[in-house]
Length: 239
Image (tube, rainbow, N blue to C red):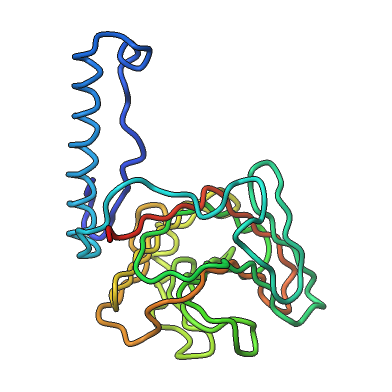
Protein backbone atom coordinates (compact mmCIF):
# COMPACT_ATOMS: atom_id res chain seq x y z
CA UNK A 1 0.00 0.00 0.00
CA UNK A 2 1.11 3.59 -0.43
CA UNK A 3 1.40 5.75 2.67
CA UNK A 4 2.67 9.31 3.08
CA UNK A 5 4.73 10.94 0.34
CA UNK A 6 8.19 9.48 0.31
CA UNK A 7 7.16 6.43 2.31
CA UNK A 8 6.32 2.92 1.13
CA UNK A 9 5.18 -0.11 3.06
CA UNK A 10 4.86 -3.71 1.95
CA UNK A 11 1.76 -5.87 2.21
CA UNK A 12 2.72 -8.21 5.03
CA UNK A 13 -0.22 -10.58 4.92
CA UNK A 14 -3.92 -10.93 4.25
CA UNK A 15 -6.12 -12.11 7.10
CA UNK A 16 -7.96 -15.31 6.17
CA UNK A 17 -11.39 -15.87 7.77
CA UNK A 18 -11.19 -18.70 10.28
CA UNK A 19 -13.82 -20.97 8.70
CA UNK A 20 -12.33 -20.75 5.24
CA UNK A 21 -8.87 -21.46 6.59
CA UNK A 22 -10.18 -24.51 8.43
CA UNK A 23 -11.83 -26.06 5.41
CA UNK A 24 -15.22 -24.31 5.61
CA UNK A 25 -17.53 -23.33 2.76
CA UNK A 26 -15.85 -23.84 -0.67
CA UNK A 27 -17.31 -20.57 -1.98
CA UNK A 28 -15.83 -18.71 0.98
CA UNK A 29 -12.47 -20.34 0.38
CA UNK A 30 -12.59 -19.35 -3.29
CA UNK A 31 -13.60 -15.80 -2.40
CA UNK A 32 -10.75 -15.51 0.09
CA UNK A 33 -8.23 -16.84 -2.45
CA UNK A 34 -9.41 -14.43 -5.16
CA UNK A 35 -9.39 -11.54 -2.69
CA UNK A 36 -5.84 -12.36 -1.60
CA UNK A 37 -4.61 -12.47 -5.20
CA UNK A 38 -6.36 -9.21 -6.09
CA UNK A 39 -5.12 -7.30 -3.04
CA UNK A 40 -1.57 -8.58 -3.53
CA UNK A 41 -1.52 -7.68 -7.23
CA UNK A 42 -2.91 -4.19 -6.65
CA UNK A 43 -0.57 -3.55 -3.72
CA UNK A 44 2.54 -4.65 -5.60
CA UNK A 45 1.62 -2.70 -8.73
CA UNK A 46 1.00 0.44 -6.70
CA UNK A 47 4.16 -0.01 -4.68
CA UNK A 48 6.61 -0.79 -7.45
CA UNK A 49 4.98 1.39 -10.06
CA UNK A 50 5.18 4.41 -7.75
CA UNK A 51 8.38 3.76 -5.82
CA UNK A 52 10.57 1.67 -8.09
CA UNK A 53 9.02 1.66 -11.53
CA UNK A 54 9.27 -2.13 -11.71
CA UNK A 55 5.83 -3.54 -12.35
CA UNK A 56 7.26 -6.92 -13.37
CA UNK A 57 8.14 -7.62 -9.72
CA UNK A 58 5.38 -10.03 -8.77
CA UNK A 59 4.83 -13.32 -7.00
CA UNK A 60 5.82 -14.61 -3.60
CA UNK A 61 8.66 -13.59 -1.36
CA UNK A 62 11.41 -16.20 -1.25
CA UNK A 63 13.85 -16.65 1.63
CA UNK A 64 17.44 -15.62 0.97
CA UNK A 65 18.42 -17.32 4.20
CA UNK A 66 16.79 -20.51 5.52
CA UNK A 67 16.83 -19.37 9.16
CA UNK A 68 18.75 -22.43 10.37
CA UNK A 69 22.03 -22.89 8.48
CA UNK A 70 24.50 -20.91 6.39
CA UNK A 71 23.65 -22.88 3.26
CA UNK A 72 24.01 -20.58 0.26
CA UNK A 73 26.38 -18.21 2.08
CA UNK A 74 30.12 -18.10 2.80
CA UNK A 75 32.36 -15.97 5.00
CA UNK A 76 35.37 -13.84 4.12
CA UNK A 77 37.61 -11.78 6.38
CA UNK A 78 37.52 -11.73 10.18
CA UNK A 79 34.87 -11.88 12.89
CA UNK A 80 32.41 -14.62 13.73
CA UNK A 81 28.94 -15.39 12.41
CA UNK A 82 26.54 -17.56 14.41
CA UNK A 83 22.85 -18.44 14.31
CA UNK A 84 20.99 -17.69 17.52
CA UNK A 85 17.21 -17.73 18.11
CA UNK A 86 16.43 -17.56 14.40
CA UNK A 87 18.82 -14.70 13.67
CA UNK A 88 22.26 -14.32 12.11
CA UNK A 89 24.57 -12.74 14.70
CA UNK A 90 27.85 -11.08 13.71
CA UNK A 91 30.58 -10.29 16.24
CA UNK A 92 34.05 -8.79 15.94
CA UNK A 93 36.69 -7.10 18.11
CA UNK A 94 37.99 -3.61 17.42
CA UNK A 95 41.60 -4.83 17.37
CA UNK A 96 40.72 -6.81 14.24
CA UNK A 97 41.38 -4.13 11.63
CA UNK A 98 40.32 -6.28 8.70
CA UNK A 99 36.68 -6.36 7.59
CA UNK A 100 34.46 -9.42 7.70
CA UNK A 101 31.51 -10.38 5.48
CA UNK A 102 28.90 -13.07 5.10
CA UNK A 103 28.47 -13.33 1.32
CA UNK A 104 25.78 -14.99 -0.80
CA UNK A 105 27.03 -17.74 -3.09
CA UNK A 106 24.72 -16.59 -5.89
CA UNK A 107 24.70 -13.32 -7.81
CA UNK A 108 21.62 -11.20 -8.45
CA UNK A 109 20.61 -8.40 -10.81
CA UNK A 110 17.21 -6.77 -10.27
CA UNK A 111 15.36 -7.44 -7.02
CA UNK A 112 13.54 -6.23 -3.96
CA UNK A 113 15.03 -7.48 -0.68
CA UNK A 114 13.54 -7.01 2.75
CA UNK A 115 15.20 -7.93 6.02
CA UNK A 116 15.16 -7.13 9.70
CA UNK A 117 18.27 -5.92 11.51
CA UNK A 118 19.35 -4.90 14.99
CA UNK A 119 22.68 -3.15 15.46
CA UNK A 120 24.01 -2.86 19.01
CA UNK A 121 27.69 -2.11 18.37
CA UNK A 122 29.71 -0.97 15.39
CA UNK A 123 29.12 -0.13 11.76
CA UNK A 124 27.46 -2.67 9.48
CA UNK A 125 25.54 -2.76 6.25
CA UNK A 126 23.63 -4.77 3.69
CA UNK A 127 25.72 -5.07 0.52
CA UNK A 128 24.26 -5.80 -2.91
CA UNK A 129 25.59 -6.15 -6.44
CA UNK A 130 29.10 -6.59 -5.04
CA UNK A 131 32.16 -8.49 -6.21
CA UNK A 132 34.72 -10.01 -3.87
CA UNK A 133 37.71 -7.70 -4.24
CA UNK A 134 39.21 -4.55 -2.74
CA UNK A 135 40.80 -3.66 0.59
CA UNK A 136 37.63 -4.37 2.57
CA UNK A 137 36.91 -7.70 0.86
CA UNK A 138 33.98 -6.57 -1.29
CA UNK A 139 33.35 -3.73 -3.73
CA UNK A 140 29.95 -2.32 -4.61
CA UNK A 141 26.80 -0.87 -3.10
CA UNK A 142 26.03 -0.86 0.60
CA UNK A 143 22.81 0.13 2.36
CA UNK A 144 24.30 1.53 5.55
CA UNK A 145 23.45 0.14 9.00
CA UNK A 146 24.87 1.97 12.02
CA UNK A 147 23.84 2.47 15.67
CA UNK A 148 23.92 6.27 15.61
CA UNK A 149 23.87 7.89 12.15
CA UNK A 150 23.55 7.33 8.40
CA UNK A 151 21.40 4.18 8.59
CA UNK A 152 19.60 3.73 5.28
CA UNK A 153 22.15 5.68 3.29
CA UNK A 154 23.64 4.40 0.04
CA UNK A 155 27.43 3.92 -0.01
CA UNK A 156 29.71 2.57 -2.72
CA UNK A 157 32.66 0.72 -1.18
CA UNK A 158 35.91 1.00 -3.15
CA UNK A 159 34.13 3.47 -5.40
CA UNK A 160 32.46 6.84 -4.90
CA UNK A 161 31.96 6.49 -1.12
CA UNK A 162 28.68 8.22 -0.24
CA UNK A 163 26.18 8.16 -3.08
CA UNK A 164 23.27 9.25 -0.88
CA UNK A 165 23.94 10.25 2.74
CA UNK A 166 20.64 10.70 4.61
CA UNK A 167 20.09 13.75 6.77
CA UNK A 168 19.97 13.37 10.58
CA UNK A 169 16.28 14.26 10.42
CA UNK A 170 15.50 11.39 8.04
CA UNK A 171 17.52 8.90 10.09
CA UNK A 172 15.80 9.99 13.31
CA UNK A 173 12.41 9.51 11.67
CA UNK A 174 13.25 6.10 10.22
CA UNK A 175 15.61 4.30 12.60
CA UNK A 176 14.85 2.74 16.00
CA UNK A 177 18.10 2.35 18.00
CA UNK A 178 18.67 -0.96 19.80
CA UNK A 179 15.49 -2.44 18.30
CA UNK A 180 14.60 -4.60 15.32
CA UNK A 181 14.22 -2.48 12.20
CA UNK A 182 13.02 -3.41 8.72
CA UNK A 183 15.09 -2.46 5.69
CA UNK A 184 13.90 -2.75 2.10
CA UNK A 185 16.24 -2.35 -0.87
CA UNK A 186 14.81 -2.23 -4.39
CA UNK A 187 17.09 -2.27 -7.43
CA UNK A 188 16.04 -2.28 -11.09
CA UNK A 189 18.69 -1.36 -13.59
CA UNK A 190 20.17 1.95 -12.46
CA UNK A 191 17.26 2.79 -10.16
CA UNK A 192 17.85 2.02 -6.48
CA UNK A 193 15.70 2.86 -3.46
CA UNK A 194 16.24 2.14 0.23
CA UNK A 195 13.61 2.27 2.97
CA UNK A 196 13.97 1.84 6.73
CA UNK A 197 10.75 1.10 8.60
CA UNK A 198 8.74 2.43 5.66
CA UNK A 199 10.65 5.72 5.37
CA UNK A 200 12.56 6.35 2.15
CA UNK A 201 16.17 7.04 3.13
CA UNK A 202 17.98 6.90 -0.23
CA UNK A 203 17.09 6.94 -3.91
CA UNK A 204 19.03 7.19 -7.17
CA UNK A 205 17.88 7.09 -10.79
CA UNK A 206 19.93 5.86 -13.75
CA UNK A 207 22.97 5.28 -11.54
CA UNK A 208 26.10 4.09 -13.41
CA UNK A 209 27.15 1.64 -10.69
CA UNK A 210 27.29 -2.16 -10.85
CA UNK A 211 24.15 -3.90 -12.14
CA UNK A 212 24.74 -7.37 -10.68
CA UNK A 213 26.67 -9.15 -7.96
CA UNK A 214 26.50 -10.84 -4.58
CA UNK A 215 24.67 -9.87 -1.42
CA UNK A 216 26.75 -9.51 1.76
CA UNK A 217 26.39 -8.62 5.44
CA UNK A 218 29.21 -6.53 6.90
CA UNK A 219 31.40 -6.48 10.01
CA UNK A 220 33.34 -3.21 9.78
CA UNK A 221 37.09 -3.18 10.36
CA UNK A 222 38.36 -1.57 13.57
CA UNK A 223 34.96 -1.75 15.32
CA UNK A 224 33.65 -3.75 18.24
CA UNK A 225 30.73 -5.39 16.45
CA UNK A 226 27.42 -6.86 17.51
CA UNK A 227 24.78 -6.93 14.77
CA UNK A 228 21.85 -9.22 14.02
CA UNK A 229 19.85 -10.05 10.88
CA UNK A 230 16.74 -12.15 10.29
CA UNK A 231 13.78 -12.67 7.93
CA UNK A 232 15.89 -12.01 4.81
CA UNK A 233 13.64 -12.37 1.75
CA UNK A 234 13.76 -11.52 -1.95
CA UNK A 235 11.29 -10.72 -4.70
CA UNK A 236 12.65 -10.98 -8.25
CA UNK A 237 11.22 -10.02 -11.67
CA UNK A 238 9.18 -12.52 -13.61
CA UNK A 239 11.22 -14.18 -16.35
